[in-house]
Image (cartoon, rainbow, N blue to C red; front, side, top):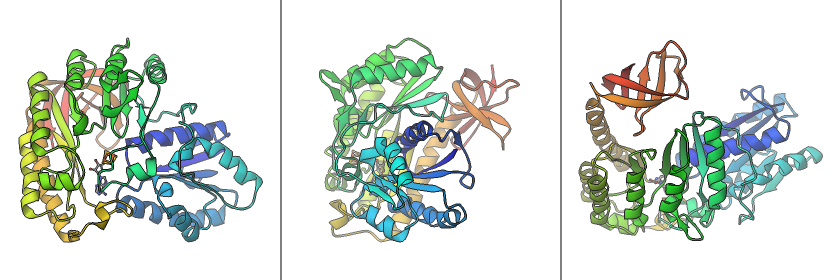
Amino acid sequence: MKYHIVTYGCQMNLHESEKIAGILREKGYDEESSLEEADIVVFNTCCIRENAENHAFGNLGALKKLKRAKKSLIIAVGGCMVQEAGKAQLIREKFPFVDILFGTHNLYELGELIDRKKSQKKAVLSVPEERKETEDGIVAVRTSYPNAWVNIAYGCNNFCSYCIVPYVRGRERSRKKELILEEVRDLILKGYKEITLLGQNVNSYRDGETAFPELLDEVASLEGEFRLRFMTSHPKDFSEELVAVMKKHKKICRVLHLPAQSGSNRILSLMNRRYTREKYLEHVRYLKQEIPDAELTTDLIVGFPTETDEDFEATLSLVREADFASAFTFIYSPRSGTKAAEMEGQIPEETGKARIVKLIDLVNSQTREKSKKYIGKTAEILCEGYDEKKKLYLGRDSYGRMGYFESEQSPVGEFVTLKIVRASGISLYGERI
Ligand code: 5AD
Ligand code: SF4
């Protein structure tokens, strides 16, 4: 039997889809296939911004025809959007052909829900308000060799005023250190070369006496040839200990993803971010003083309620001062149930759009400048695959920059050294040496 999973949203969701695949395999769906050929289709949704939701809604509508043509097809919808207040009911009404609805809190129950659906005619809806357990027992079907994601924590306690995550993913829960170490050890033995530790806020990880820097230290001390990344860090929990651990281990990539969100103190305060622009820049300086070759990447939001031109200019100047290597940029999207959605001074869409264009221009120009500096130098790339269009192998350096090169044999899963001959946007082109 065949399965097809559609994933929306972040790396956290991509990894959860790997776990969903693990559950499906246990249930006898042993082959991944196209949407048209599948016996079960699972949508793993995201609700962080409205466009992610609209996207999922649009694609769900298109499944109706498929279901009509193949009555035995099971359609399951899960993830953040289903966990959102009132959304499961809405999906049920709009898409009555959906067979199973499950939330972020009971992903691990999907197997049972499939059994239930098979033994009854009506749809199965199971969206508990709280999580009963973590999904540590699930064996993920990894889809991104030589890279692998490892959850270290779930949920978030920060309640940034714009963000729906704490509502749909619940309170912060850290996984046991031993389970994390065991999972990473196993991945290294299986030949994975890049491990990314995942959590909504990795810096507030805690298991008994172990905080995040100690966990990172222990993972980086494991034997084997691999790179280590982690995301996401909250600036309010930035610590000198974390930088010391990064400095100690060459295995830890010299790039810190530290979402700034805004460069204006007034907006940061309204966002409930609990740091100032000055504090943020202090962290940047400290990181670069300790690890001069470190780079920073970030997340930025434009058009937050009441954001003035001056506030926006402050974000632009932060981008310059912090010298970000790259950034994920977003137009603020009001999410029902969050504080910011109730604030006065919502910004017109056109203003948000105009601001993001300027912001992206600036970020891209910085990224391009940094890429140019690679020309004539060498870069160590972990080869991830082959680009059919470019007819070149591709991979990333430890900063996450994409590098393309020719090779007669497949070096997928190997570290290769490239002499960079050309840079284009964020991509590097090189010759293998
Ligand atoms: N609108 C726009 N961007 C958002 N993010 C989170 N919530 C919203 C929202 N309501 C962005 C933040 C966060 C990233 C994962 O998504 O920048 O860091
Ligand atoms: Fe959302 Fe803030 Fe938690 Fe990140 S830290 S998931 S932006 S509430």
